[in-house]
Structure formats: C-alpha cells, structure tokens
Length: 90
Image (cartoon, rainbow, N blue to C red):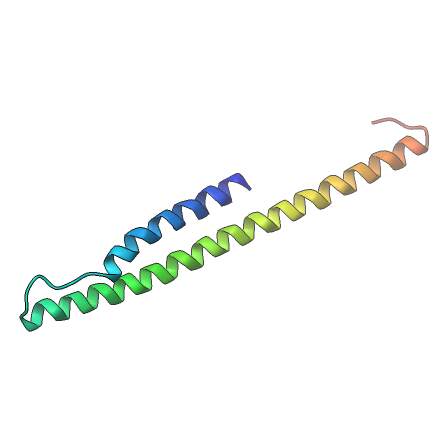
C-alpha cells in the first residue's frame, strides 16, 4: 500500500513539470515560434491529464489494498476465535 501511495506522490510531483509545459511561449514573434509553443502546450496538456489519471489510479489501488487487508485481518480474527471456542489453539 505504501508503494502505491509513493508512486501516486511521484505522479503528483510530476504534474508541476507538465504545468510548465502547459504555459510555454514561443521565443519569437514569427509563425514557427508560436506554432511550436502551441504544440508544446498541447503536449503539456496531454501529459498533465495522463499524470492526473495515473495518480488517481494509484490512490484507488492503495484504497483497495487497504480494504482487502482489513477484510483479511477481520476474517483471520474470526477464524482464530472459532478455533479457540472449540478448545483448539493456533
């Protein structure tokens, strides 16, 4: 679970790099410069959207893992209680 959250944190940090691309401006006033900046901004938009989706996926997986671990622990506790009630031991 910790690894999923760490990976999500990395994707969150990387979003700031994508934000820099989203704000790119051409170095000059000629058509080629502005056209290039538009492509860089579009690339930054796509990168940012992808990073947000990856972060959300990792956070979702961490929550699912946490829920599964909780269910596993509860089931194990129940089974230990059942064994102990029958006079057995683990």
